[in-house]
Length: 109
Image (cartoon, rainbow, N blue to C red):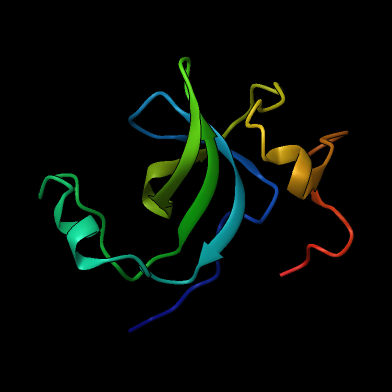
């Protein structure tokens, strides 16, 4: 298995390539680290491969906020410049001022 560096970092704001949601990265798994049931619940034609980074997001869409687990292949940088409204962001992060959110002191992984 070849492991590569994650494209996105903790605090980056990203958007899903297909579905209308965006979020702030709060953790990164170097390769798939969820359940087999979760992976198999994704339609085969959309199912991501395991050997890539997967991101834990404080996610939001037009209706709600939630936590999402998304493969790198399905994420793009969010360039809207809009702050995210997920209520847990203020517990974990400062900012954004210019660029990504920054983990609050004492929250480093």
